[in-house]
Image 1: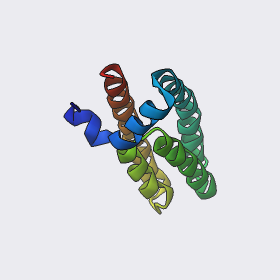
Image 2 (image 1 turned 180 degrees about the vertical axis):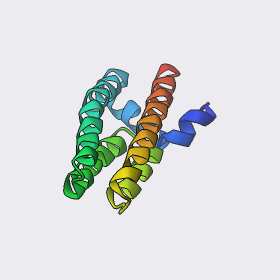
Image 3 (image 1 turned 135 degrees about the horizontal axis):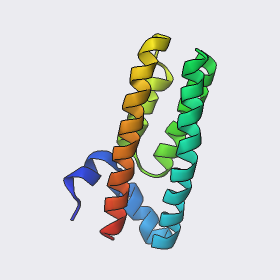
Image 4 (image 1 turned 60 degrees about the vertical axis):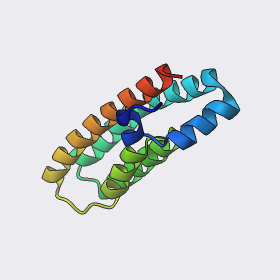
Length: 118
């Protein structure tokens, strides 16, 4: 049975497919890799915001969007899809980045909860 939280943040069907075909240890490795990489992506997005680099912002949001999709974080993926193409001001992007970090934390918690229940 899925928790409401995990199904709110995650593509359970995709993740269950990974679990069935690859096994839990591989899914755990995928998640661990995401956790390492996401720090880099968030730092890169933040750097692009600080330097007011539209190209950098789009590029790093795009990379993180792909990473989120690959681990079934569909809500986070949707948020990054919007951020990637935003034309908000440099100042407004500070708020967007804060929201993104929070959404990432929520998605990671949902993933951990989902994986622990397997």
